[in-house]
Length: 255
Image 1 (cartoon, rainbow, N blue to C red):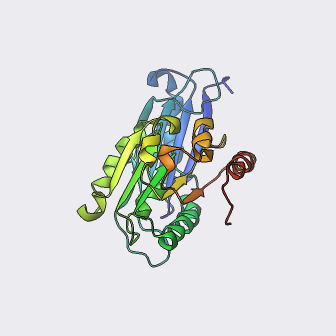
Image 2: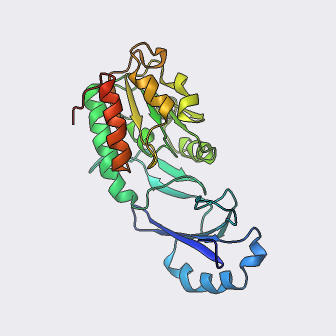
């Protein structure tokens, strides 16, 4: 709610069991967090790799705003790239403040590996990942043998900074395959042209209506080469709704 000083406490655990904490404060100025912030920090910083403050006194359901402050630890979080047991680590994926990161990133690795397995089986030369966030799935697909190009996109502009930081950690041969576009799914459809496989990882509300319409269209110029759609869902109701619409448009569910 909006009463009191502290609106939310957000915790996430990395693959190496590092704990990151975000304190969402019901104010617009850092000085108004004191002295309570200093007291809290003394209690928790020994157990946290990083602590950040997000200032959000705005009405509405948005958990965080674009006002971030790091008060303990590194400016950005990171995870090792290279999904799956025994896989080679390719680099480090960075998460700037404001970039979405799964609360259980280690568990999310199982989903990434499943998508990667589909890409290896289908052997597309070009892939698009929509609702990509910082690129958790897309970056892990770069080493798939058939892949020559991947285009990632997301509406949150801070993810572009995370993408650029990750790109610096990759071998040049892999980094040269990747591109990133900022914008709503409906406004970046051109990024799908030429892709034989598209990965979508939408928020709980599901796919944008304009994207569903284009995917259902037999004559869409954006999906003329598309053969496989990988849908990663965090909301069963929206998944069921979207799949029903796509089946009406001629799609067939494989699994």
